[in-house]
Image (cartoon, rainbow, N blue to C red; front, side, top):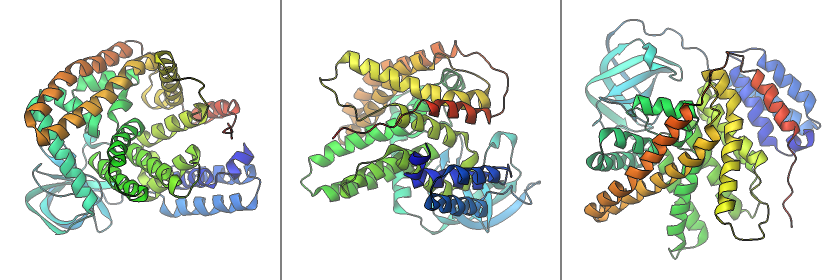
Length: 452
């Protein structure tokens, strides 16, 4: 294990950076960083720990000072630092104004996107209990009147928002509000309007990841884009560059949440491996994207979604070998075996974290995922294909969505409610027990060498 860590400096850097960032909440995490120094065999890896741990300590997120306690009129100028999320009656984003962050609520027709510098007049107030985790925000700001855009942010953010809005208008015309909300959640991780009963069943059954745009979604979208790119007569490096831009636009449309950033980042690293004639390494790719995510948003270190993404992908990278040679074509039996193995590993990897945070164990999660994952994949492809077709022939696009969405949504909801029936509660326990459980699992891991 020591040699494996020494060969993967990005894994060492990501671990030390996370310990340094989290030290503002748990100071003795710095001692774990010191213990990591003793584990590593060479000087280069130890300097990597020292640098990453120190950088994390310098960038560690601090609890917001001087929060807003009372409502009052305010006028602020700042930068939009999150992709706007659509709520029932508003569009919500995070505004950084003079080093203080506010949860900004604007009308849904206001055209602001990630990276815009805006001037907003309105009413500021305290965070409500329903606001939840807000990346260090000190209060809320409800826009009253016009929102002035002083300078526009990156074009990919605006393109992503335009894609998401166009898609949502299309499915709203075709489907019922309840079905449209679930399709939007599967395609772009917009979970704000999803039916509460549907969301609860999906969370309890362990299939909530299908509405969190991540690895599976990125692979499918990248595969579709790559299929079109291969038919365009342009050099391979240029087609890969265009594919990378489109994946970033999709990430912006899906909210730039940690699982999506991680998945797109890993896809981009895998694509770049072709240009440099190198074999992609799953652990290093995951760790590299984790470093970028934590540096871009240090508050991600306390985001449950980020850690669920890390442990699920880490489990699949470590215990599902994608390089094993196959002597015969894959048939239905092979597909079922692969689906069961992938679902089982991902479910077992997330089980300790889910139990510690939510106090429930989704025992039927592997079986529920056997139905939910293919259904969500087909729903994603069918809905995006229907939307693209509707841009050319509206009637055909609407017909395709109507025909495909009904059965697939039925399978998805059936898996969620059936799996939720086998979800016993567990006594609360410290998340640090997860470290020991993952340590035991790593004792059974053996590196796989790809055959020449």
